[in-house]
Length: 518
Image (cartoon, rainbow, N blue to C red; front, side):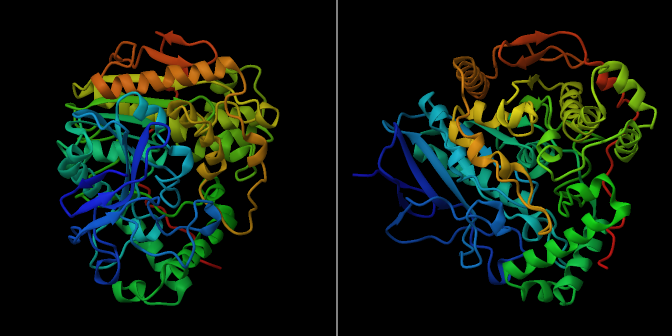
């Protein structure tokens, strides 16, 4: 008989044990964001009588149906929910891992099969994954409504964990939050957020993204979305749009951005929504300013992949540099001088323009934000561990390398996560087609060495979450040592010279005009 657990809102009945894991899925942590609550801060869950069945995965937040996560216009809107996975024998006072999915702030689901945490649960954890509001619903500027509703949802989910996880066998004083890409930026945001203080003890951030936007920029984007939807840019105007129409309007604006020749690299992956520097939930970029690095009382593990940008460039979504002049254009677009291309050529002498362009954008958009946040955390007195993933996928002739998101299946110990490989690419305009490469990428661990690497990463992440020690020393002020994951692991003690190229680059909230629809 499936176990019943009593939460603060009522009883929930989970699924029968599978692979030693009992799962309680679709458990509400906040009220459905419908009606007057649609663009409001998350509201408390209404209590229910009796026992609620918690056997189906958490509903997916509204997102482009092409994302592949299962949302459709017919779906309901009760998606502020969590999935809780516990060992079948229900031991007590276990450490807790809370997973925050990525997806460019516009797609994703914590319930995706690739995120099934059986390997973590078998190592003695209660694992919680959350869904939160995405796209305009979560980060669009709505007059009279709070900014960063998606981040407010995450804080509400963590409060639910604090109040309820003991009933599932977890210890609320031993909570680790973890995420990748937008999920990693969420981790950074939560480390910096006043309202999240004390809700977690450790944090794992894989591939932190550095983009934030000003309130003015968020409002300009909202005006363009309202114009595309042909409604007034008011709370009533947006609330009158069903999610599918709001998604379509956002897609129209994104297509216009992608088609605008002035957009440059920003138009290659035209994401409209990012955390908004509102002075409340987000007080500034996570790696700059007084709040940089977040709460030093939280132990931090930061990881990035060696070839992050290839997921976008080598899958056809973003341009591959054909000349060194184009590499210089990429450098200027991310705040480097055009002369930086010569520095990259000196450091990577055998790289062609395509590989150099990938290196510049991998560093600028993922590696440097990750490193800088880690260094800021250390400078504040926090304990920080660093890692880099270098295992090169053999898929499609090896052209993706150690790409963005490829470390996630290894850290989860879950080969099914390869099916999320393309889903990690944010949903792009309709004019662009998703390459049909998914089936050819299955079979994540093709060699015993790769399987062994996954076991080592699972052990390191869970050891860190349990006691703060992943198996290598904490970083010093120079950002070393760095654990390098690959077919053979190496502990690097020398600073990467590519870091020095970004010494004068400052991460600022984006405040440039989004080109208006044609």
